[in-house]
Image (tube, rainbow, N blue to C red; front, side, top):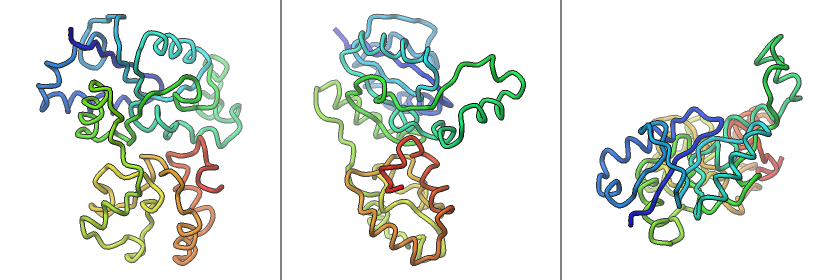
Length: 247
């Protein structure tokens, strides 16, 4: 029997799920290898019998926790899909301000109508077996991870900095061009797409294990960047756990 797969979403733009749809259009062999029983972006069916769950989005209210725990109880394998699910993503920026202020800013005089709390990644609530980083995810990396999960192997997610990929593409370092980039501490795997097209990395794939923070800070100081400029860039995607960046 084909493994049964389901896709779920919490607080997110659902861009990672749309990337999945794009990926499947060019990898029909994968569609033939699994049975998708639930995927709101693509099918109307809602089967509850699944072995693998791909979950996009961060957890931003107490009610989300119960639903996520139910998904976790059903799934033999749970995969965090994208930056929001993996590291909290842009949703966690609100954690940097008092929650009452955030509620009033977003909902104005209707603030009390909506339940919310500090945004957090899936791993803060349940055990996550694998993750696919990025905002949005890389479509080819998604295919590689799915194949690894189906084979019971460790997903091939890089644990080295994005600068490696940038150098392989022979890009001129953006710092040398007066720009800013978090490539030295950000997880590789995107093909250095942002620096290749002239924009600095903002860390959407999360921080690598054991980043060389002293070296990174030295580079930033050397180029005259202020503490506020550094913090603004580092908390675009990593606000849930700024401690990992040495804050």
